[in-house]
Image 1 (spheres, rainbow, N blue to C red):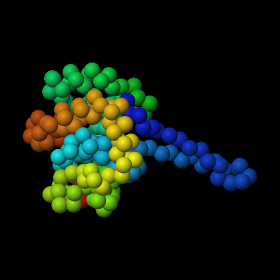
Image 2 (cartoon, rainbow, N blue to C red):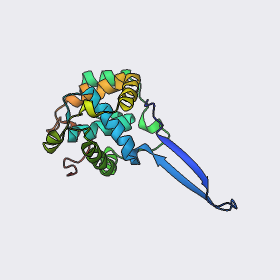
Image 3 (cartoon, helix red, strand yellow):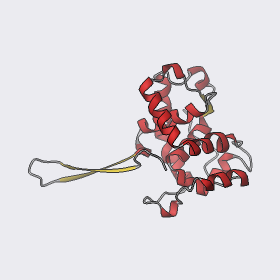
Image 4 (cartoon, rainbow, N blue to C red):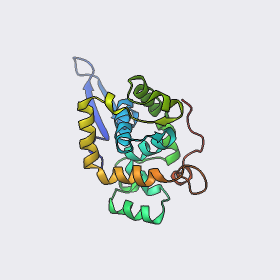
Length: 190
């Protein structure tokens, strides 16, 4: 569903003799710059900003939309999700662990990405101190903004579902987003 490459393998010959081969695996979940890109995509849709916890959850589902199949959604949102025809995790190339495991694995990269966004002036620092991520649109480079607009346009229905529908669910309580997503109630501290 996402237009970015999720899994790429590079093979590199390590010596001039060709006797040694090194396998390097890159994945977007382990790339803080890719995380920055995803978070800006989400924040461009929600201009008034998102709580850090909500942004992190939405980032996880943007990275792995197939995990949305594991999300207990209200009936009306579930119907719109089915319209997207997102591949089920059981049929994807890569086997994904539980939502809680994915959530915990992403925390290091999400924290690094958020700190980069604040450090580069792309997030409002005063809002960030209140645990809210709000994009400073005037500091966003034009080339990056146009690339994000293209990506968001091609994934318009997914972005709307994530930010406007799933992002509007309450965070806590028995029907809150944290419980629905199956992630630990206590998240990382920045």
